[in-house]
Length: 101
Image (cartoon, rainbow, N blue to C red; front, side, top):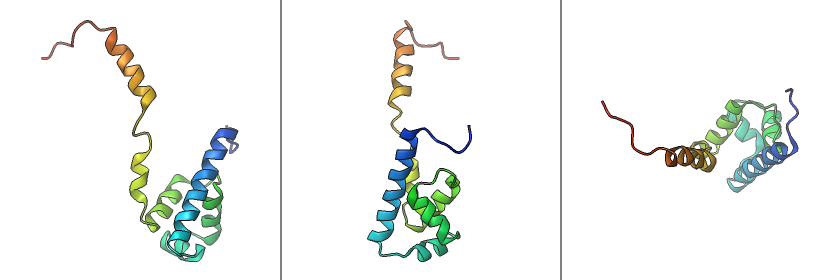
């Protein structure tokens, strides 16, 4: 698949980068300070803030940790509306609950 993402995903990555940058600025931290706390280079922080798709998710987690936002990662896929709808469809076709042993 390569490093090229569909346009919709690129936009989402850029949004995440902007949100991380805003969080850094709200805390009045420089790129160098976040880089030191996240144990990576300032260039990498710059790439995170631009939403570069080639930056590893572990780096994003370290940056979130440095900004004390690491619990936000737990919100990913939390709702899963499609999965629940599919699960509910499967349940409506069943006439009774499974037998318990």
